[in-house]
Length: 84
Image (cartoon, rainbow, N blue to C red; front, side, top):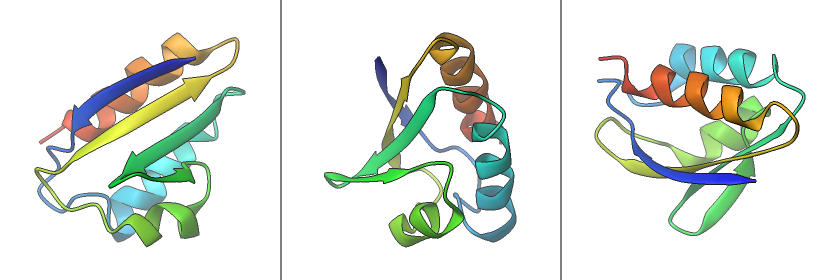
């Protein structure tokens, strides 16, 4: 399992379209993927869960990946939230 604190550098945060794209990317991996904000953890493969966090731009979140492709998942998801 990998846990990493990352800053969401997308100007819109993880709202609407970026949230849907993040969920699509997370679903490409067999690893479990979670995202945490303010001690609330949700399944990052669920659009409803992700939207419930209301992640804005320039906020820090914790990404968690767990499974056989966890390193690749972490790398790709971290790259996604850092694209400005």
